[in-house]
Length: 203
Image 1 (spheres, rainbow, N blue to C red):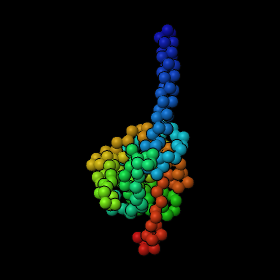
Image 2: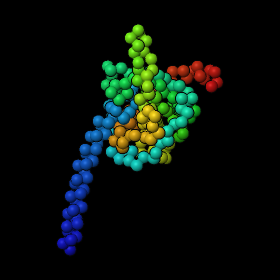
Image 3: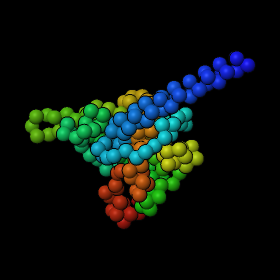
Image 4: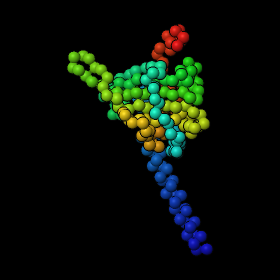
């Protein structure tokens, strides 16, 4: 009987410790919003997310051949932007065929994949700035069943030359929270500038 009381007391202490850990993790998720989401939203307020949203998220494969997909947009992030430490440089966004359906309809189907390809920049000092070495690629994959906890989107990041996702759980949850601020746009920040032209050519 005494052992049972000791066990219950031990469990109660563990429950209190777990609650504090949750609070710390939620705070970490809030800090991760600025670095875990796509660069355009670095300054956007985070939406509330469960600290366990990305726990044990299914693995996302490296999107081989993505540079042959449709180019959605490019952008330059300079040192004047809050996202510069993590996302500074020249980026290109690519979408596969399923992602293009989402851009057209606003409803991204399962199988949609978006890639954010980030490069350093090189200033030649003569008014010309061009693309330097790759920094990393960020990937969004739509699968309503696999990623139900994060509104159907899975998130991954691959360092240059690597094929294994390096995001930690808090960073992945930060991505989801940041993208949730674009819920009316399917959780996607990028806009397809050449959509009308592409539709006109039938591609």
